[in-house]
Amino acid sequence: MKLFYCETLNPRKACAVARYLASPVEFVRVNLAQGEHRRPEFLAINPNGRVPVLQDGDWALWEANAIMCHLSDLAHSDLWPHDESQVEVMRWLSWDTHHFTRPAGTLWFEHTVKSAIGMGPPDPALVAAATTEFHAAAALLDRHLDGRSHVVGDRLSIADFALASALPDAQASRIPLEAYPNIRRWHDGLLELEAWLHPFPASPATLA
Image: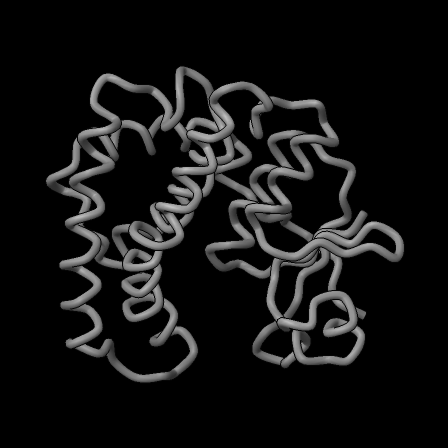
């Protein structure tokens, strides 16, 4: 299997799960700056032109959350549970997409990515709106994590990887975590996992 990625938020969680599970994947880096995601051969496996993508022979799976579920199932892991907690994991995956990582991702892009690729300074209006939205979501998550080691139950799940995708770059991205001690404690626990601390391969293959 090949896992196509770049060093951005959604690929981070897919790569972290692959490394955590020791999944038998070949990591293939897609160079977005050179437009490799728009090449016909890449669009043939993901017509959206986005990463991550998991390719297994003639079959390809895109969307990071789906990839995490599939890798967990292949490894017979409970990262994607198949008991009564599955619906809770699904709830948090959905909530994360619409309420937590969306504003966090905006702050990451405005403060970290734009300067790195020469797009100019952050947009103050976008930053202000994202910051307000992030505070509302973070307050809810912080309350939920009070007394909890993980997002769902007492075990690691793909919900943890998904919700944390923007947080390793929180300081550089000016994601305001100061008022949320439970989020910081929970993410510090994730940072003890080598797979989360270093999700991307040091010497990846490149898209041919």
